[in-house]
Image (cartoon, rainbow, N blue to C red; front, side, top):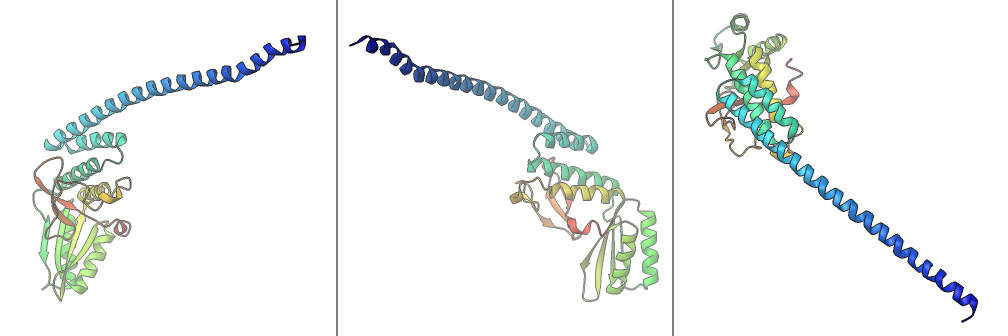
Length: 249
């Protein structure tokens, strides 16, 4: 080989080494990235586990509060749990059950709070009975059996007073007007909103989200019997169509 060939030899070697050097650098960067990601995943796993324990603790504390009828404290804890697990249908159910229990507490020991058969009364007497019931019952459930014409007027007047109203066919000539008023209405509506929460799994809405729930229709059309996840004791559950809320104040 001539002098020129001897000089080009090292240059060729250098050119061949460049891809190897670049490949080594890239490999090193990739390995470092993988190590960092693995450490990050381990850290995230620890955080999730910590949150999970805190989540369980909040649910347990809420259950204890619910059992002790400290409903407002239970609600605060359940809301805290939902901040951590916003799609957990069981917590949404527990929140609804707690709101419902609080509404029942404001309704008092009698259910319905006021009940009258007005089929033999005049419309004026029916209005007077409603006014008396609304004055006497600050919070609770009112039920009136009325002729169709009176039922429409009773329902309209109750709505004007800010009550929630639901009518049920009673006979060929009468209807049952169901009215919820006061704090009972407030918490029942919040219970409804919890059970139909938009962040809930769509396949677990309409009271099907919790395995412990059993649906048994009671006398009132918007009242059901069920088993709460907070307790094994049976309680009544209100289902109020969301599209009616605005119309009923």
